[in-house]
Length: 71
Figure 1 (tube, rainbow, N blue to C red):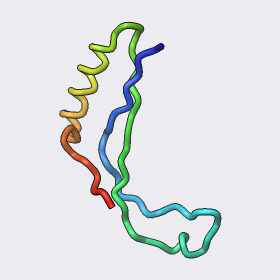
Figure 2 (figure 1 turned 180 degrees about the vertical axis):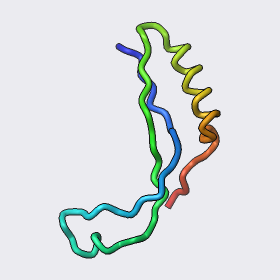
Figure 3 (figure 1 turned 45 degrees about the horizontal axis):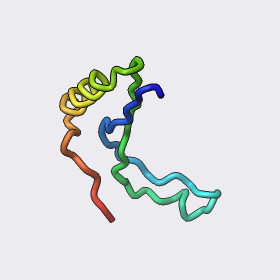
Figure 4 (figure 1 turned 90 degrees about the vertical axis):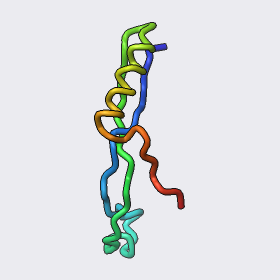
């Protein structure tokens, strides 16, 4: 198949979205750190270049070693 890399691109502070129009969700202003990602595609048989570009982007964005908290 076509080489594709889904990689982390950072985190955003977001409030929860309302779920099924429950009113208790609409008023929740708690900020949560949500991961953001991008997808990169390359030409056939160019996985090496794709991984190299992905590593460089993660390093440039400062997210290479960052993980969201568990729990």
